Image (cartoon, rainbow, N blue to C red; front, top):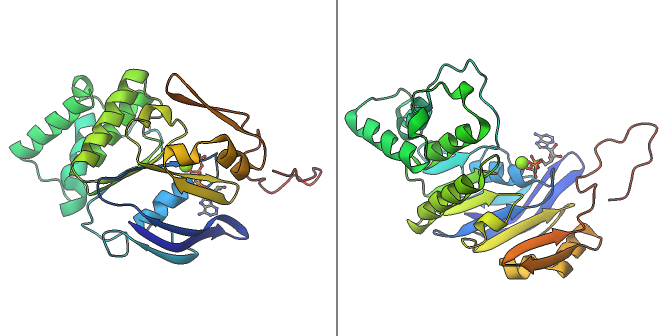
Length: 266
Ligand SMILES: Nc1ncnc2c1ncn2[C@@H]1O[C@H](COP(=O)(O)OP(=O)(O)OP(=O)(O)O)[C@@H](O)[C@H]1O
Ligand SMILES: [Mg+2]
């Protein structure tokens, strides 16, 4: 993936600007930052779902968003309606054959692949349950299985660990990393860096219209985060984990202020 002088703005609000970035095959890349900083929008730009305001983006040397691109996507979590007429295994099968032929081709091979994927994410037990009746974490594991079903060359994951218990956080991070080891470029949005610390090559940290790119050691420091947030933020390591203290309350941008309120400085 290659971005050159990329910027994205909605109206007069710029999420990020002047972004030059290459993410290579086999790289595990995380996107961090407070709510509303532009992480999901960054993934959508890589998907070709949101046009850049300036600059260029290429995935595999071409404009993103073409049919047949080997891109796996785990969207930010939204629940299935309880009445969604689809079983867990049908959802995973869509990752194999759904997008390619439009209709699902059933075959023994597809069934076996779905079984293997369900087992990988620990979903065998609920393979035949309608997805809308599953818990948030159970649904999330299916989304992961669906996204890796076709061995994507690029895997874009928007908070894939959300609502997973610790065991499944580790299992799912391991699965995503396995995809990376097979050569996929992984871009993963997260609010929680610790579960993926061992896998990470680089991070993009976005806050308040500014960003920093580098290794964890380069970006996750008191100096860098304090500068990004414009206030004192302490970063320390405790038993190998990264602990960030002092994130400002209003880390998101001020939405249009209420008429009777003064706009607060960030
Ligand atoms: N199509 C759009 N039109 C106008 N504003 C938008 C649009 N899409 C996103 N935004 C705004 O851009 C900002 C960034 O949104 P985005 O979803 O990228 O944030 P995020 O970093 O993923 O946040 P979160 O951690 O809450 O998921 C938000 O303030 C959002 O309201
Ligand atoms: Mg988001």
